[in-house]
Image 1 (tube, helix red, strand yellow):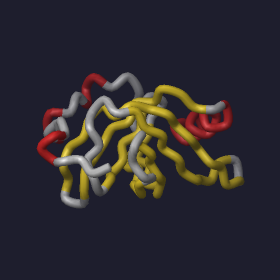
Image 2 (cartoon, helix red, strand yellow):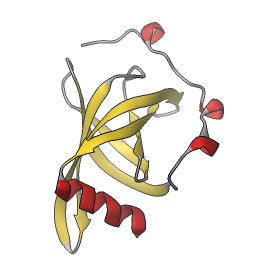
Image 3 (tube, one colour):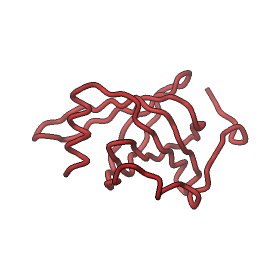
Image 4 (cartoon, one colour):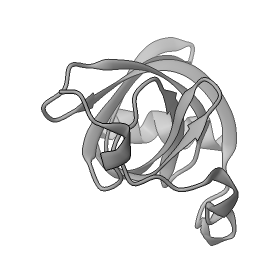
Length: 122
């Protein structure tokens, strides 16, 4: 599914509500995949993480309000772990290397929850 850039609601980076965040952000750069309904999985790169959401950079814009699944492999508890997060895109803004999106967590399995908690606490 191709999305016309003019059809995507975007938020200028300078207008993001940083002061409204409920959880502290931690810088976390990691390759990942994101799946939006009706589209093929896309490569992305996470930028930061919190107990409430993840920021990532993608090549194509994803409209605000779209549901998605973000999957990544990372090292937690001396093991490689797969983290799956179901979420909703809450912002999408152009950046030099693509589009920065914010994903608000909606659901995750118990192992992913434990891994996210440990990553946020580290």
